[in-house]
Amino acid sequence: MPYVMRSDLLTLSLFLFLLLTGCNRGEGTFYRETGERFTTYYTVTYRAEKPLAEQIDSTMDAFNAVLNNFDPNSVVSRINANTSDRTDPMLEEVLRQAMIVSEATDGVYDVTGGPLFDIWGFGTKKGVTRLATDEQVDSVLQFVGYRQIHMDTIAHRITKDDPRLSMGLASLSKGYVVDLVARTLEHYGVEDYMVEIGGEVTCHGRNPRGECWSLGINKPIEDNTSTVNELLGKIEMCEKMGVATSGDYRTYKVIEGKKVAHTVNAVTGRPAHSDILEATVVAPTTMEADAWATAFMAVGLERAKEILEGQPQLGVLFVYADPTGTGYLTYTHRLDLLPLK
Image (cartoon, rainbow, N blue to C red; front, side):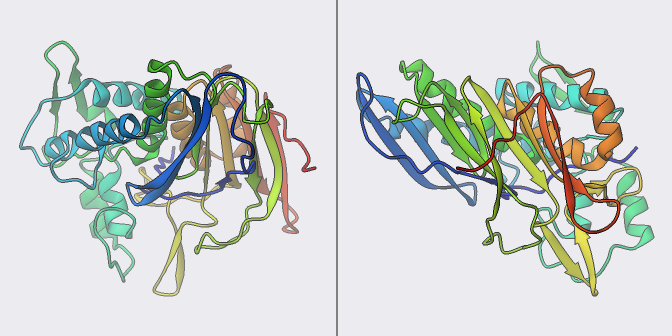
């Protein structure tokens, strides 16, 4: 079966639909923190008695020190470089979730496929101008496989069967930092909030209007500039949940005249394609939604439906290609797509 992992720090198709208005509801004031971290943008809207910008920033710093693949001094980067085997509770939490999705998808999803992204130009190595050769792909596939990672959560150490193996956590780490910021807000007694980082979202309580939070879902319009936003519909978030969207229609490259999708099949080592154009997943945590949205893009519609029967905690919206080639269709499962008003 194919493997797929989304390339790092790219907003794909989740667009913040509700522009917040008003400033007060009940006790406390609604604050809105915005900025740029991890080469993407974030917005945190919350009701509190005082601003929590410093605490939010500190949480992001802590995440960066452990899980940022693009920071050579992070915990995961040092493990990948074989300069350390020490883990961290945050890394262990992310890896546990990654292993769950890997097992449930029979290895379709695998966080050790990062080197494949490098040879196709979506990883840490930039400027790829030639399509990967069979020899390049075969050489990398020798050290791809999540079962080659062994985590000791008591001693907080990781061993690898092959020292060349590395972990690329972009497919769920952005969702995880969203969850971490939400935990920080809850620690300070915040009950009404929405956290959005690079298109991954979690929320709780109500918005400044006293209503459920709303998110717009983009149509899968091919546009690698990420500037075209036409909405397909919206979903309402009336209970705490995490939402993530993945799709290939925005994140791709043209190499030697060929379109190269950013999802990669770890069995063949080549870009993966399926009939799902866009996968939006709602889950108890944003990390979980992030990982599953990535995995579903690879397995295709029919296999995704089978997997969902064993994952009752998930709600999904799939936008998939019309077999007639005339457009696209939608499939929802435990999730309501509402019309725009």
